[in-house]
Image (cartoon, rainbow, N blue to C red; front, side, top):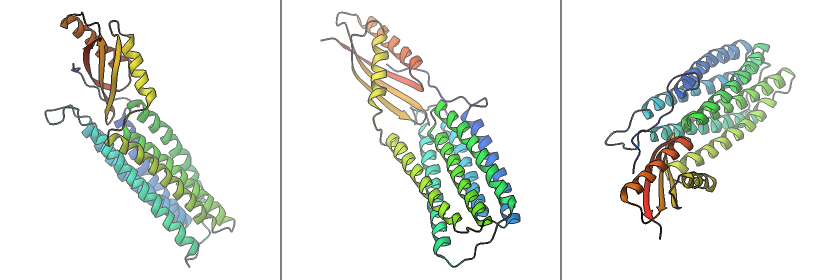
Length: 298
């Protein structure tokens, strides 16, 4: 039997995905202006490059916001499981932008190391802008990651890691600017290579996680065991034959096969299934719908 209510992440409050994404969007817009101004006034190529990185973040965060609004639409005849899958597609888009940023940063660092261009000594304003960016972006990462985990939103979690990648990028810029001011001009591209590696590594990990959802990869054994234990708590359930989880964006849809006393009436078996349905929906996070199949115990 199927539940008739579907849940979606809260759309209000400071810890809602949409509010969090709005804040992230405006933070990125402000950082673009701060970094670009500091890069021009401080004559820092590292800071100018970091400002372009923040500009791509404005685009990716805007995509996340539009995706969250689309995925919040209720189920309809063509989409009986809702529109949560849009969340995963958007997450993959953000991750690909993140991956491209890492690759471009790496290529730029290689050109600086082996090219013939001259590096100048940047001014202190670029140094202060890098420190400001590191602190602000780390705060945004922790805030966004918490919201993403709470709402179980792949795109918000991906956006959080985008903030963390910016922390790495700004740390590289800080090292490069500080090194250049002390005369070690090549510290900038070397730090840039390390940042490129970290961004690419994060991107590959996130791609694997989200592709697993798209191809309907089974959850961990621990998750299945937790579901089975919760089902057995319900009076009248003799055994759990099978439990499956189908994830669509932030939502989980459960299919559970249970065995009950073969001497029960259809109504009594139905009542047990109903209790299982509501118990799972209340005890397991992010469950939107439950299908319970009842069998007699052999």
